[in-house]
Amino acid sequence: MGMAMIRRCLCWCLLTLVSVAHAGGVFWTDRGASQLKRMNFDGTALQTISLSGAVSSPGSNIRGLAVDVPGQRIYWADNGADRLLRANFDGTSSVILHTVTGGNSFPADVRLDLGNAEFYWCDQLRNRIQRSTLGGTSVTEIITTAAPTGPYFMDLDVAAGKIYWGDFDGGAIYRANLDGSGRETLLTGNNKTRGVGVHPAEGMLYWINRDDKKVHRCPLSAFASGAIALTDPAVQTLYTGLDTPHGLVLDIPARKLYWADTGGNAGTGNGDRAVSRGDFDGSTPMEVLATGTEPWDVDLDRRCASYAEWRLRCFRRDASAAQTDPAADPDDDGLPNAVEYALDSPPLHASGSVFAGGFLTTGPVAGAPYHAVKFRRRAGTSDLTCVVQVSTNLITWLGSAAEPQTTEIEVRPLADGMEEATVRTLNPVSGYTSHFLRITVAVGP
Image (cartoon, rainbow, N blue to C red; front, side):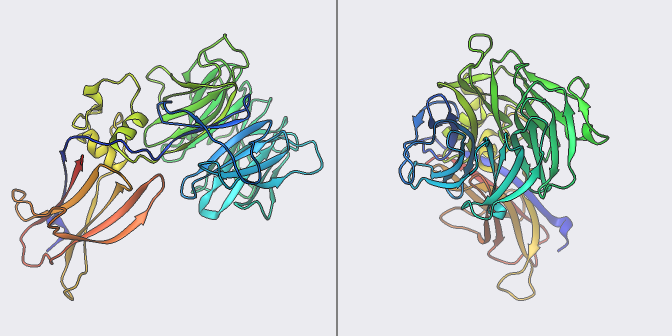
């Protein structure tokens, strides 16, 4: 049977939603209160993380923040004692990873490269970017003389081997290889860069313009011929009228961006002393999620253990029940919200990159082809079932959780609570004129 006869379909069914389990959420540093915070994606269930272990306080001048979801750990910087620290999500097993000796130091932001088990940070006063193992050993200088007034906030594109960072007071944004070579100036004229985030798949750079009280973005292609100015037509302004915006993190599957606001100009703009979020294109008003004393930086645990939690992550808090219903398709891309939830695709932005791929493989019968499908799905949920069914006529479909017609031959963990499943039929497809697979998604008990 030729590949032309292999077809794949994606369908869905819905059951009554029940229990709400929680997996992910938003982490942030409150510098003014010397506290680490955690909350749901919509700002509810705000809690302070109590530390135990090597330290019982996160520090007197806490700054950058990075979340290690697989390891269930948070990393942060404390400029009060010039050190880098780590603790479990629940605050236990706190450790001091590295202490900068000699004074005149300002650890300002941290980022993780989990694939290579490395930990990056920028030191504004020493004007360098460094990295170490996740345990704080083998400290290496990556970039020296990083910016005229020192590096401040950064992001990694590990797949492309790039690091991005901003200039504390100079207003420029830079890029280099992860080993420090190939340095480039991308943008000039920003008014204090206070957050940098890159979206590699869409080739987009996001950043915060603190004293102009704005959030911007620009296609990476605009930097192909060298540095551009903030006034370049390629630069887009997403949100304005903020107070003193700071750290920035992107939720790419949900197409949301989160930022903190220190409130340094309290009363002169929106979102002061709060953590807020908005859309990648700035198409809806910002949402103020939670307030603090002096929010400084923010990072995400993007896992969702239930549809209810995913809804909080992907939709505005004032979204209507009709828009967020599992059967709804608000972006009109043919995928209802239930399927978007299962595949971790954006419910408000049409996307065709999440479909399954069908192919022929081997099986127990030597020399006989088996129909298989590979697809992404959400793992560790309380309310999601994905079943691959088979058909020879697109009318009668066989296969259920109780009576499967397929078997999993590989499950590969992915980031953010997702996994890639490869499933093949129990029986070979030899002798069939046509053979089809489809994935059914059930949300409910």
